[in-house]
Length: 259
Picture 1 (cartoon, helix red, strand yellow):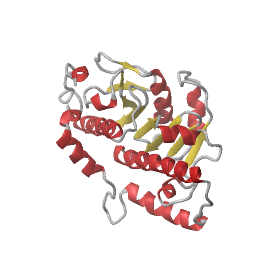
Picture 2 (cartoon, rainbow, N blue to C red):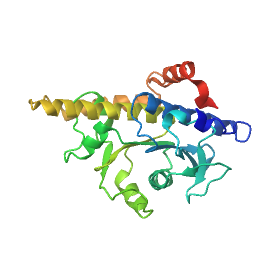
Picture 3 (spheres, rainbow, N blue to C red):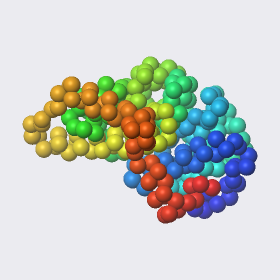
Picture 4 (cartoon, rainbow, N blue to C red):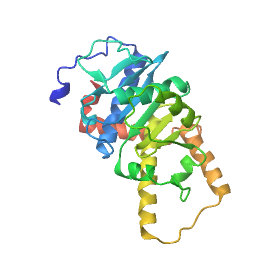
């Protein structure tokens, strides 16, 4: 952890709510790395700062996801101004994408973008994600597509990203990768993990060339409603996901993300 060893703790310099969000955001970075969905220092995940709708947290450019800590995350505004002292810079493409989502969707707390092999492969398929199985129901009528415009350093692209994402929770960046945008860090992890599994499954079954069994639209709509309730936490009053378990595992293995 040499790259983060000299990062001073911000725990006593930010609000308790911001610190909690920082810890959660650092945790999802570690989870993405743990599950092999990172891309060296590429890709990015953001979280809106509680009580500060125009400010969000983003990873410092140059650190691997497995090195991210709560204190190393950069707090910035929608114009790209860094709001505290840091030795790191923002990822320009990351700022373009996440400022677009955070500014255009006040309901979004966390947005996560990846460049996995299955995600990039799916992004090149004209048909996109097919509603063929239970996991895919999470994205039924809840996925959008954005045409490739090159490395996302052109701030003008933000308007088109906002337009294409609309009110959806998932976005396929054509010839590029995946993005999810939801109301909490924990739900972003649930969606991102399952989005990845959907891509892997579709590529696997399509490679067989076999005829597939397609669930009915009514069944997919019904399942989508169930999963949406689970993500909101109103299925029996409980958060029905693996977030708390994942954090316990992370803390046992390496608790440095909470620094």
